[in-house]
Length: 288
Image (cartoon, rainbow, N blue to C red; front, side, top):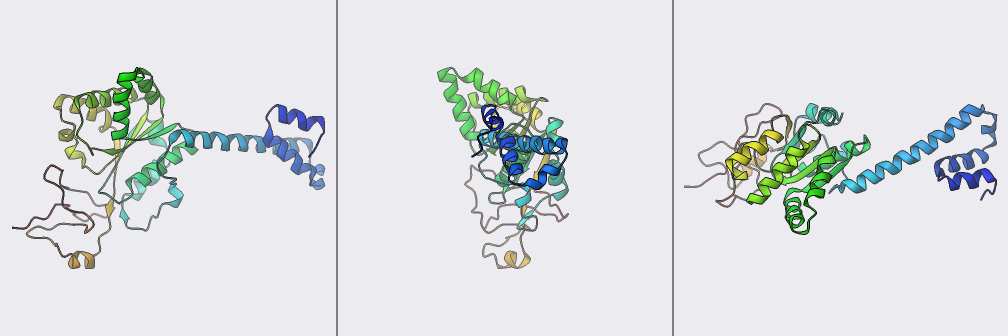
């Protein structure tokens, strides 16, 4: 441990990056031959890098992303089908600078939450403040906030977030208060922040799932009209479709075997565009 007054001052000023870099220089005498400004530049770079890493870790903790996902770890050749060029353009964060939204759509198990968290992680790395929330839980928290007086502050906090990730849109029926709360959130963020939504429900059914036609128009106007849509499909091999014991009956459909038919109250899958141009329809097979 070095005891020179310079080291003590660096510790007092909380310049730990410069302190460690200076200790490293002292342990390598060949660095002493470098010009003073170069050595000083190395110390400043070390401090800058350390502080930048700490800021990133702070943003990631505040984001509370559900999965530690990154775009670099995404399996581009895996079982998913999606518009790769669109995802690559979203990685540039232009949509955040333009205050546009992103809708990540597809059935269960295709990795919607993973991709949403990966985009959120990328935004944190680029200096944006992100918050991940499951929509049902957020609406429940807002319900409690109405009762304990935190509602205005919670709305203010959500309005200041650069990227708000709302996972599991459309899973539950909205109450009248939930519809109004959702409108308040999206209205506060309109053209000032970006919202990323994941949903199993095709966009065509969102209006009906919200319930109130007037509020549905207002909510979707603030969310959809300036949004990118990233639709994810599961790859289905011909041999799997042929071996499917349920199989199509009277209709041509892509029917992933892992899905159980929905209850009557749930929405059926309709059209899902395919990235490679195949005309695929997800329709629940019915037997006579």
